[in-house]
Length: 357
Image (cartoon, rainbow, N blue to C red; front, top):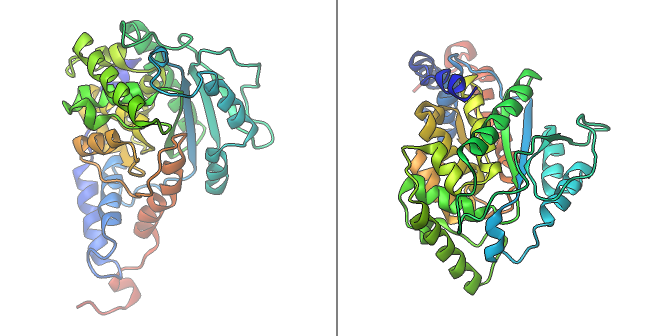
């Protein structure tokens, strides 16, 4: 499944991009007056292979959840049980992501790809507008990356393929854009390690404070990431090996979601540092997958900026967010839709009878 998905990913359609640039130049506005939205519309035309590209609606949110053996290194003060407790909150509709998803009219799918705490039985279909739960648990949390590889290659592959299956299911159901979400206490530590491995940046540049750790815990967290990279020496030319050595199950699943969407020429709206670390893995596996990526916002986690710079992506919003869940991406969703709607609905100078300069 993974190899066939990667093989289906193609570069952007240059003729569609040229047509979008030409159309932008004929619309009733000064050339370039919509700034980054103009280039975004061009990129989305290239992804779709059509000008104008399809409106990116409806959207669907996929929250991948997992736990992490590195939690034993005390890189966060939050207990690991919070991961499962927050899944319960998602399913009840009480989290920030739920509020933002309702505002966007986007359904939420929660995927247990590696939660350590067994979850209570829940229906696998949404009821009453509440999110649904998909159980695709590869293992009950990763191993401690500070001691050994977090995952085997087979486990990393299984998590990636779980992400591709979820993406295909959401796209088959009619979604035209996928919004990344994540949940996992301790997951910014593997994200920092992944970003450092794929970009070559120093762990001090890629490691942030996550849920808001104090100075001593932050310094310790940087040391844990640095030591893990020394121990495993992950090779960025072997992306699956990097995910196995220092990644998380939710990071791997998000990688699969990105690859599947890119293969089907649908955009993926990235949230924060977890999604960015997964995007680096996806692009390492299939460089053309970058054409499907839209950076929703600039996370306050420094590794997100490092990763986005490496990917050549500019975030649409910069609000100092670091919550995860998909919250920042959902806030950016109307911006993406607006960029495409311009190509569909704005009159040209000729059709409107407006004089050009």
